[in-house]
Image (cartoon, rainbow, N blue to C red; front, side, top):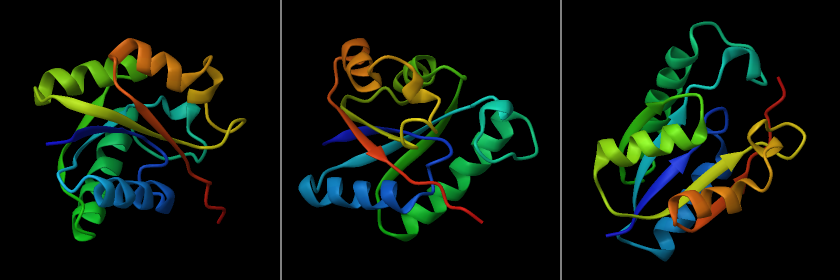
Length: 143
């Protein structure tokens, strides 16, 4: 069975991520997804939201679980993690104790995403977790 860690926060409800997961499921019918939502500090969010970072991440994770399961995506659960991407992934792996076959990370484009300020996010995640990483870019919705 193909278990994938899906790493996102502000982009978790984006159509780009949803479409990417639907494509992954098309390619691997046994795919199962675990959402990993780091508690991004409120001051780092592109759009201001009220509440503590962990509350915002938990609220977004709950909304995504509903939206994705309504679309037929097999989501095994969601993990709200620490502010660090690596810590959030480590925690999710320990909590779910499953063999993961890949990481799907969804960010805003370069220049908007704080996660992409780090040198080569994809390669650093692949080296740290020894899993292939798929990077999906979501575009912010302007109201």
